[in-house]
Image (tube, rainbow, N blue to C red):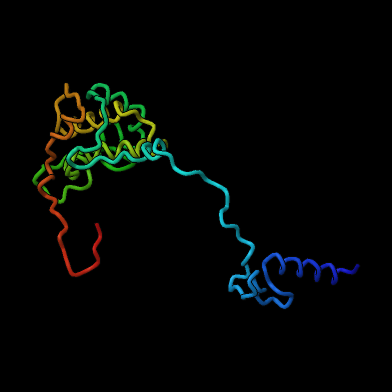
Length: 200
């Protein structure tokens, strides 16, 4: 069999596999109607991969914390404990005191009254609970979600202490964290604009 015939046979096989007639037009499906994709009758109803999400698996991801503290988990952490967590998991990206980088500054050195102050935690974040939520989900950058809830409480306490917002002996838990009033809280207002695209 010559090369031309082999190529013709391969091409015919490919066209048939794709649901096409030999001339390249869509072949009729099992009901005799042409299919624009040429794949009628070839795609299964189900592909057979994945499994339904159990309540337990959904709970692993359903960990959002609202500004009022709803969703905060049990646990606690002190500033001293947070220093140790910070030195192991955070220092390489944020520097020894939260201002050196190379990643975002965590500590503001500007007076609270100066606006805008930059994105540092103490001067910009309106809720301490949001800091907990973000840290638990996204940090450390290379291994997000690996800190325990106690470690997150502790490192949040340490970062807030670096910003002068909690004392050296502070121990944070759900109740004390939700009661922290961040300096920038009153700088933020609800987005109640109307007449355009609504983004919430």
